Length: 614
Image (cartoon, rainbow, N blue to C red; front, side, top):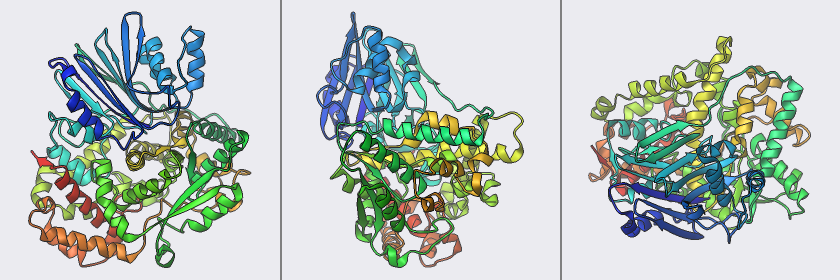
């Protein structure tokens, strides 16, 4: 994995912009700590920060290759899991390769197939390719949206980068929020409208989209979409196909020239990934796989089961690790470092995020990075197979809004009335919700119950899942750790999308088809374990700490947060506890402590990024 940035401008000679490009590239150093490079011409300039995972000698970027008199340049962030398949196909067409990197294969794929090369790719990626002869920029992003790609377009120029911070390092781009940006930052956050960059005039290329910028202007189009069709496989065939797809995906994603590990919580998702990773290691005669888990100091004393988090992980982690024979590491996080890491997490995401859920992942990734460079994670199985409460609880299924934002009134009550008047958050949220429903690929003849589950699945994959993928990418890449997500393989996503809900929940269990597919692979007790999300701290010291910081912010008359919140309401909230505070205001994990931590992040973001409201 890496960090990319580039600039195309018809009005300026970019060969004189090396200093600006270097400054933009430097902001991405954590994404690519191992090497850097730049390529500049009159109207195009690329920079690259490299995290070396495959082909240390032959994968340097920006990579340049010529065909006849035409020169092609690529800056690329990602991993292709079918590199060898594409390479063989290109070799049959007469191409030769100087190394074994996926970068070279991707560049040659574009030279051979042009913009349709993306249809050949299986992987996670965001890249830019410049055609010097035709003066054309081509950008593309992977189908599911695992790797980020932001851009700003202004008439005769386009600037792109892996992260917002690289764009903001260009003096031509200002950290400004308009009314829509306020809606995203204060009400949608930590999610974002697909394609929205929050800051004014900044966008993100949507997953499964391509972009071309040349003298004819800007063109953007999707190259892949989910399609709804009748599922014709019976239960046994479906079970076997799910098993085969997961196994093949995990094995493909073990490819690396650096140490690989897995993230293990003891749940069905991470345990399945770890089981097949162990199988892959054994087949190749590699030493034992290392697995990693996270917990918090004193959680064993303070944990209380809830509807959203029925049990803690540690018993299950040890059970699975012993069963599979992994070398296991458990990372323990303490309250003071978790509070300190809230601002670090903001810098990693460039936006307020999931509070300590982000900060803990940053600390977790930092510990893993000391031993490994690549990790496989069970992220996104709940989105693909329908594991969240809002797929199963009638009161959430029937909500006429995003079901992970059920406690929305609490957030509105905390914002200053004048901001509410400008943003009109309820109207904004509903409009975004209805826009997404209009995109859902319908299945003719489907009954109302299954149609609604299909809607929730689409909403979850295009909103909530993107929030978690943002989190995973930014927190891990902030320390130079590449996290791969096998459940995001588009072949698996396409297949599972059309499995009927009755079959997905077979055996009267959420994600029943996944559990059935893992029979014989994992211990029976793991197959029947109730879903439990990523662990958070239950230490009351954390709630006390973030509450105190919020009160300090409210006493600071220079705080930019004061201008956005209803100060009296927030003061009262810090003084009480109640059922409304204990209900998640976003997702499953973000309750009272996370609400205060989120406000701390908003304040830190406004200060550090010098955000102006226009």
